[in-house]
Image 1 (cartoon, rainbow, N blue to C red):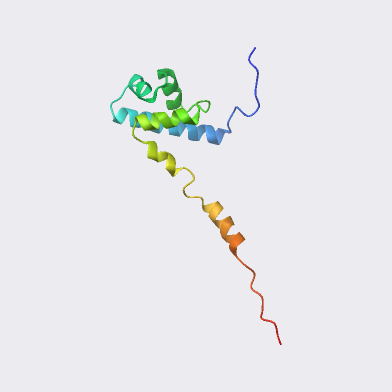
Image 2 (image 1 turned 90 degrees about the vertical axis):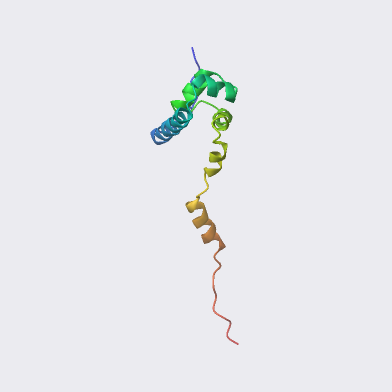
Length: 106
């Protein structure tokens, strides 16, 4: 019997995003007129793994995703992750603000 591990199931919102990423990778492959087997060979993984990526599987290691992106000449797209961190920048700005005090009266 397989051992159940906590945390392997992603929240529905993230599962949907993984599905979108998989679809985008599949469309990129099809635009390049490459088969799953060709991408798998270039990414040094199995065709089954490429198929799982294209279905948005969250159990495939991020390194494999990167190798598939590299095989599709899309490796720089990974640099777009967390690029626009608006919340983090706002929190940083709040932490940088210093309190203004009135000058001391002499």
